[in-house]
Length: 594
Ligand code: FHN
Image (cartoon, helix red, strand yellow):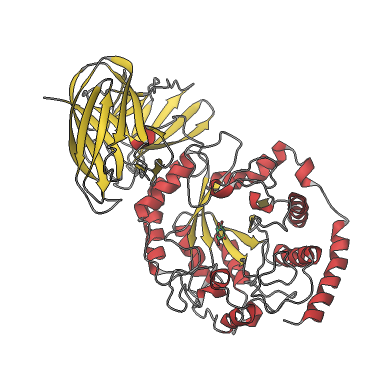
């Protein structure tokens, strides 16, 4: 691309930026918590957004020279020369792109905002930039997709947001120049790069209407610093004071967990491809972004799609921990969203149609953990509404809300238009809600509790249920060791990565009626294996039959064991040392032996 022209453009830019710098407010330092809370309100209420990774990397669609696992990191992973990669622009012609259709699909899925890649790490601008030719102008596509999305979002009341990569493999001035950047000349100059980036951000924040979030990424390389992050944060906020900026503008983010360690910049944390085990308490805002299959950008060979049920449960899981869910699609170079994504968003939308009240404008669950699902909460005046999201429906029709000591004035199924009253009773275990024998919604059924005044919740650990059964779910286990860890999606968690036979799992629970118990385990494995269950001196060896799929769990009888009465009975599960074959364990159920 033409150097001198670029240089002069940047010089012109520097002058403009000088001008822009005059009216500069240091939001990073001076914004009050109240002002921030007001600005973040829509985001905290929205809970659900669409992420769109779209760019020229959609042209090879993840495939090159026999390899099929590429995505938006195509240029970096193939080390293709920049001059060759630029040719993909000539093949990027999204004639089937329909902004209204994309926005309609997002809105019908229950999403309140859209975050689209205005520029990803390959530096390609998905808009008509006057600062470079390495943008949509280099394609045969005569339109500006971001302009059309801005109009469609405005018409539909959806917030448009821009993902923008700080790292730029294409720009000659990005500090860590790639050896395969055969277009770049001279010595990289980060100040000049930042001036260029600011110039494009000015185009994006002055030419496309109000932008809800500037979603930065690619901040991890050395050339980017905390100071540059603070400066960029303020620069963006001065262009659009109401906009929200994620924490990837600074250097505070600690890995995929996404939350800041030490000094951070930005308005909220960004876990990626994972949902935090617990929330971070009121006032800590976060948003978990996730792919629907294994790639962010379009990959025509990736059919490893999550189920719609998993996507709904992830959304509920995030909301129950006080966070947002940003779900990704990777459109094709023709401008189409993959059918598998469209189908899943439609199913999520059906669930949201009946249950959105239990997601939007809710706060985190008052219960540390719930074996059968999750909970979200709303408080208005003296009334507290608890939304119980039931993934694992009680086959005995008794839904126990552990530790809840307050009786609701009303209980009903949210999806039941007549809100027919459900009977409730207070038991030693907590509130018991009498529910239908079969789950009205297999993905997640919402039970609503309307409570007056202060809600009394006693922190109760695991305990023997009224029917004598003791359920030990994976997400209540204390895991000991190097590899063993909790994995899986909300409501489908299991103990996994159990490769080290030294690792173990333990539960503590209350037994009121001691005696002999049959042990049943829900397990998955690839080879025959065995686990050892211990209570005090007892050792029970449970044989595990292969299910040939780590996600395929089967109930297995593992033997019997004596349980004493006690508040903190400890049961541990160990690998059998000789010839240990890893297993996945989703729960143990101890049933009084007949
Ligand atoms: O490298 C990017 C990746 O391509 C994708 O954009 C994700 C989305 O959050 N972020 C980075 C990886 O952490």
